Length: 612
Image 1 (cartoon, rainbow, N blue to C red):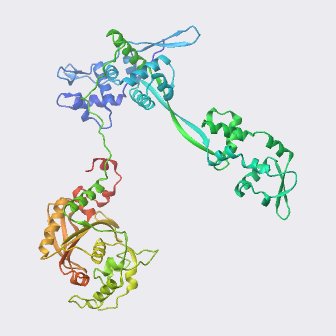
Image 2 (image 1 turned 90 degrees about the horizontal axis):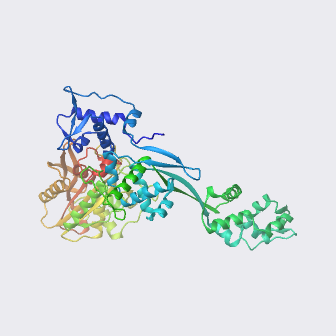
Image 3 (image 1 turned 120 degrees about the horizontal axis):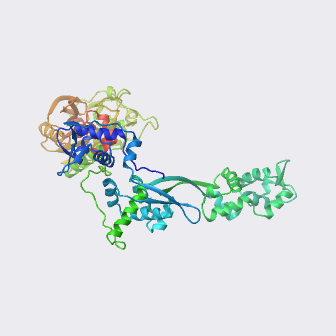
């Protein structure tokens, strides 16, 4: 009699479970013990190991459901390392008997003895589609494809696939995937079936007299080129070079026209239904190979077909189901399926927004709910908006290649209406309408036209000021900015900035500081905030906003201030404008509790799944 053995856990798994029990100072339930083991150990493997230790009388389960070691002479039994084969021999309860059947074939029957508790639990929790699949596999006693399984069980194809997967995981069935290559017609192949092969259409234009290629009008030049090569290879034509290339049909060519070719026959065959390559005979495969060299004639598609066969454990499970139905007189009734709602299940991570992207969305929603209007924020702007409108002189070091990027192509863009340009020119040269002397230099319109990736979000505030604003008014934008910088834990060469300004009567620096503190606390979750005096060419007075990070110390969030009179008064704005530009990436570092700004764009799946 041949002996087959049911699956048993590895020795190291059993030893790991027993050692964890020994080290525990208190009695644990199965769930409590499982949580102490490495996370990668599946609960099913752990449960099987417990069953083995119980069977080997190493441990026992108390009436309260706790696990305890069985002691011998006051000491825990020492784990005797047995071979995997030895453990399997002890646990195997399935015998296979082979009897000759009338046709001379051998039929396998399983002497279904009692299942262990673990196997019984698995059987009791089988779904209806799994039970149907087991029944069919046990009856057929052969491997079935997913299509055959669907037909024989009467269940949908997708349900059959799920049943195959589940039974394979529970070791009641053995699944495999077989790759299949199917051939169908491409655009040129479909055209050939409908209108004929190019070489045949070409030959129909010819006769025994020499004919130049330019005289052939019924087919395209591309088809002539294709047909010419194929026809010459098969000796269907003769070629002669005079003033131009001339051609005439051969006797073999005439015979070729009278009957269908192998290529035409297989193209028609594929045209009716896509074919699996392995089902073609050798001659057809050769023709197919030849057609494969012709562009657009064929398309190849690879599919995976699923197959499953029943295992010994599956046979035993099916017999157990039959006996249960018979003993309970439920042959024509549905068996109630047991559901285990106590064991831990695998954590599910549903689809959601990337944590940083979600944070940006929340900022936008908060600002809009507070009555702020969103400004446009193009990636590419003219220096006019990035610097000139903001009263930053054209010889300022921040406008050099070390601090900003320039656009290579195109290099210059269009400025707004002449009146605005003239206003900004006057502001730079002599202060314009403001009580200012300006920068006292000759302002260049050509420099102002130069295109660049926006270096700060304030460029978009400048655009809005030129475009026109409401007073009182509140404006913001979440802008992508670019600056040459050394990448480290708090710096990137491209970053996001939360830019904005509010305009109204009687606005003071005190109100601006209150706004900035509100942003740091509400948006970033900062606990300690401080302000430092700073300088920006476009604001006066100016401040720097800082917040205390638990790991990095004091981190600068950004700058702020009141727009200078040279900006607002020259654009016809008499009220005070409180403006700010905050590094959104740094705000997110605080909110998401990160120590490195680069982690915002991490591909770490664990962080992406568990992030807010």
